[in-house]
Amino acid sequence: MSNNISLDLPEAIILCGGKGERLRPITNDIPKPLVKINNKPILHYVIEHLKQFDIRNINIASGYKSSVLKKYFSENSYNVSIKIHNSGDVDIIKRIQDILVTVQKDVIVLYGDTISNVDINDLISHHRKSSKEITMTV
Image (tube, rainbow, N blue to C red):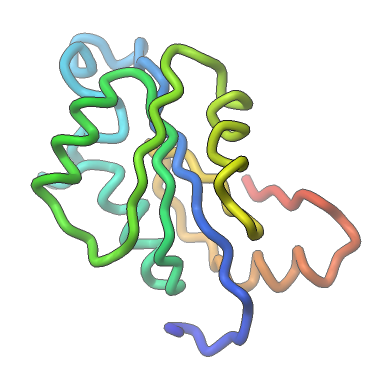
């Protein structure tokens, strides 16, 4: 593992189902996580961040423009397991619930349109030391 912390690693759920209405017309044809920054989609940076912490099972919670996400992943490999779950036009909680029925371990939930520098190992360690069921970082 990149940061030498011995943890049973969770799976990731990346939320990519919103319509990106505030970014219209850019998001007329693509979901917001595929909007490019420095010639790479925001989602690229999110996945690369997860990989730095050896998170290799990634679930994409899609809806809006799901077929565009499928096409993107058919053309771009990240050397991780990526599963796309299309829940249709539903809220975030429903997207997460649809994925959780297939996941048998802890999960990290991330937005597909947000780049961060959170130390995921520290976050996991802090969470597992606490008596909480949910840990959130902002």
